[in-house]
Image (cartoon, rainbow, N blue to C red; front, side):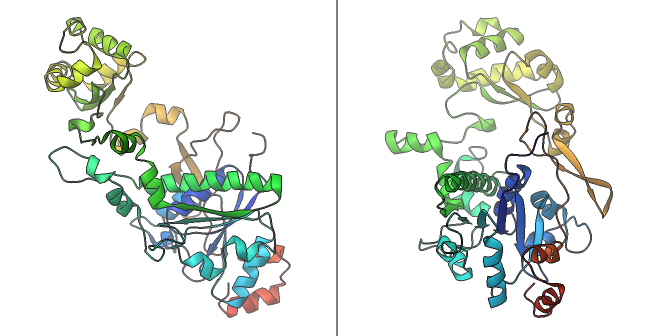
Length: 397
């Protein structure tokens, strides 16, 4: 593989737990040097996020989000810590954080603090509700966003309680949005010589993901309601169906897929049935259609239907996480990466980067031990060992 596209880019990241580290991990995958700033002694709280640990102050959770980074312990509430941060920022292309909205200004992480030092520096702030709103001081988490942005209201079975998605999807989407925004701002700064503040909030990202249901509601006063079996609000059939040994998801989003499904199920008469002729007809008679399709699908196991439908109708098996991870297709495409870790004799298996560069996924190294790169980074800034020892004794690093 040729050099990754962000090779030579340095990002200083005051980050913790999920959304911020997830975003900077994308930058690391693309070759950027991520210097992770952690509190001396404790570090990122993700290090203590169980229940699966890898020795002292390390965990599977922490490794998931912090591969291929460097760790610098630094107390930003001290004068020496703030000075070191400025010295480090002068060598960087960007400074990012995912702190509570009121913290960046207090800790000197804004563009106003660095403009005189390096005009081209980009400062990315990923917070729950932003730095200027009335909620700037509020703690924020993914599940709260799913609740307030309406995600839970439209998730689950119609007769069930509001349900959140099984993954922290808002954290992850916010991290990706932050990575994209920061990269775009750095590109702009490289052309103009002028950096800026960039703000991304979990709340804004969650609301933005409402997409077309929001447009329907805002312009047509339409309300998207839950459909049984995770069905699409308007396309039929587009939902799960029971098989002889599990479930399958079928998506007849085009007329040709509907017709192909009828032929595979040996129900060609449904194509000309007035109740199911168009998608509008099928939507109006979806319960009657579901009963017919249920009776057909339940006759064979999932793998049989996948074999018959794949390539003709958009279809997928409904798998458990365990089955998804052992799926031959996932293995074949390299979805899982095993990296060396001192406390995992057989290696630590994690999900590989979803991005391919020149046809290959980037490889990773284990996330660093707390402060593993402190001496090296300070030495690069010109600090002698005696001064580093003084800073450590004073609790600055």
